[in-house]
Length: 216
Ligand code: DX5
Ligand code: ZN
Image (tube, rainbow, N blue to C red; front, top):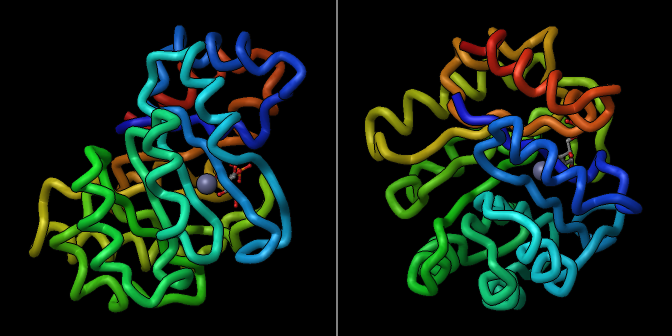
């Protein structure tokens, strides 16, 4: 099980040290949420911030693009140091082309689905993906509650991956924490994004280690 702390819930006044804490505690990826105020009703940061953060961490950056027309920005995020670039299938009409392009520029290519989108939307593109991201909340904000139906979608995505592209990772994002992470793992996820559960804790390092033990 891989753990990807989401810096959306971190304190940006001390972001370098917060990243250092989760890195030292054994995080596998750093989950970096990019929001444009159009695909989702919130704003975060662009490639400049990602490039600056790249200088203070050796973790692979797992960039989750919640933006319309992601094809306009993937090269900039790759240049900024993203190792995994994930965009939403709902955000572009040519997802297969964009997955292939992301791989061609040397990143791993991820495809995300919102709660409203069936796993079947990925059937014809799963072969071209390195990661499937099942959103278990409506994207845009940290600290929301896990939507229970997501468990069935994780099982469906696991079946699709096992049948078609077993090396593809299965990531779950939104409302993940102590109360549900065992079920999420049992349903077939192998990457857990956690924002509030880790950065909302008094001691994020101890909490990350504890949550990893619970997920094992
Ligand atoms: C939400 C983001 C998540 C967010 C999760 O749209 O994609 O990555 O940080 O936050 P928690 O873990 O608090 O639900
Ligand atoms: Zn995310």
